[in-house]
Amino acid sequence: MRPEHKELMKQRRRNIKLTLAYDGANYHGFQRQNPPVVAVQNVLESRLAQIFPDTIELAAAGRTDAGVHALKQTVNFFTDGAIPTERIVKAVNGLLPPDIVVLEATEASRDFSARHSAKSKRYLYKLQLGKANPFTARYAWHIARPLDQTAMEEAGAFLLGEHDFSSFRATGGAPMSPVRVMYEVAWEKQPNDILELRIHGNGFLYHMVRNIVGTLVNVGLKKISPPEFRAILEAKNRQLASPTAPACGLYLAEVFY
Amino acid sequence: MRPEHKELMKQRRRNIKLTLAYDGANYHGFQRQNPPVVAVQNVLESRLAQIFPDTIELAAAGRTDAGVHALKQTVNFFTDGAIPTERIVKAVNGLLPPDIVVLEATEASRDFSARHSAKSKRYLYKLQLGKANPFTARYAWHIARPLDQTAMEEAGAFLLGEHDFSSFRATGGAPMSPVRVMYEVAWEKQPNDILELRIHGNGFLYHMVRNIVGTLVNVGLKKISPPEFRAILEAKNRQLASPTAPACGLYLAEVFY
Image 1: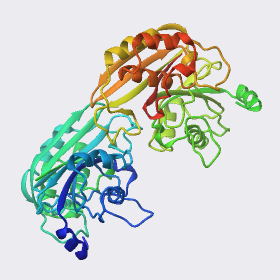
Image 2 (image 1 turned 30 degrees about the vertical axis):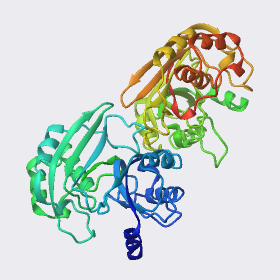
Image 3 (image 1 turned 90 degrees about the vertical axis):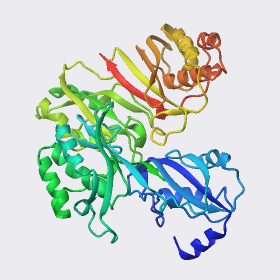
Image 4 (image 1 turned 180 degrees about the vertical axis):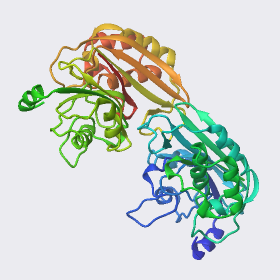
């Protein structure tokens, strides 16, 4: 956020928290971009500006990449607009394109920040097994060869608890501690040959979920054994892990405060 | 098909039948269009041309409209190409965009026509009930208000058997008999608040399924009673039925020969 906006925000009376879902297939990620590239934030801010009289600047819990989806993204913004909270959802959804939907709007305390107050986040990653499915091409990663789900579960369990996740961190990311805590790492079969990873942690490094999935799929394909996966984690070396899984399978599922 | 092509086809040695699925959201229907408009047929024919040496002209069981999907569309084409049938699926799918997938390729008898040999067709129509869902915006018709499914089933049952379906025929369509036979008309709840119509008949008039759905949804909303729906069918008058339901909810599910 630009400093002059930060000051402006503090002077405004209301802090509105929105929960939203979006199909990321047609957007260049969440974070605002310069036209003609369109991000979810561009669309959302321009529509909110039609309802709220002041310039809206959103803060989001997670800056999803191009093609990544959200089941429950959380954002907040400061405003002097008078529209009652219970009318915001309908008013904003009436202006948004159908691939972005506001699920909930609530009044938050002044010190709430969708980004900085987040305690933990849950992501899903969907694999389309079996035959290629034209309806999931932009919503899951298609893996035609059989996967050993038991091996993937065994390897994934090594991620639980506190670890230095440098091996799964994108090179060139912002300098910050690579230590995170994972509370849940679970694979679950879903209808229509979808295999879904549920991963819940106190925070995630840039591309971390996709790098983990890329490596766990190679465990499923028996190119990497579960003990080798553990060694990759412990080596704290991005060169040892597998390529980043595609964006289309990733969903920001929920943000906890 | 142009007459000179019809002649050409007869001289070729093989008649190949393909079953395919496609996400119609990004296409202007199945039937070939002049650029820059792109139809499924344009894409499929141009990719087949890379594998088969002769000019390919497809015949399809159903000419789905813009935005309409297919779970199992059937097409056929004549060729002198030598590629074995069992290699066609992999070869074609390797060239197709991910939203079009060939499911099966078989050698058909010379007199088989995907279009003219079809005995019956099954369509699905998906309604998204409850809250708007950004992931089904292009794959189902969103109806936010509660629907009386029992009334929709009661009204739908009047369609079974042989009827003159003029009330559900698009105005301005090609002149042909409006009499068709329906074998199945059933509504079924699916996961994630999807209500699905399954309709199977020996043939369908232009926009017939979408006009039936538009009218049955008004039965579900209690704007039309089941006896009034029956009266609309019997009146053979398009003016009495409801507006056409959106294309996005419609799927060509299967073609029977």
